[in-house]
Length: 81
Image 1 (cartoon, one colour):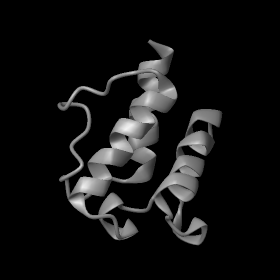
Image 2: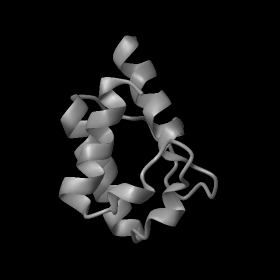
Image 3: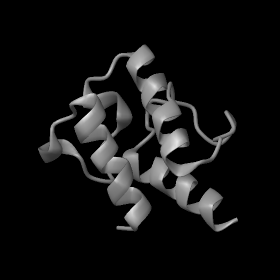
Image 4: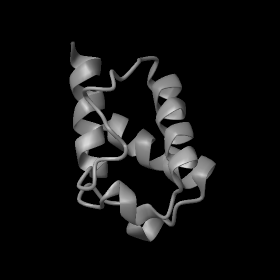
């Protein structure tokens, strides 16, 4: 796990109250129990934390199979660019 991914997971736990026991790369975003508004707030908080903007075509929170690992990959890819 990258340091960005660890920071991303910490954000979920500390600011959004997601249970640390369910957080792992393979967990679907839909399974975290966040409503759609909270999920968008989380994406904005992640963008602020990493000082980047994630284009909508790279990340769709409504996507049924979107996992935490997929979000980490997008963030890692954008940070490397």
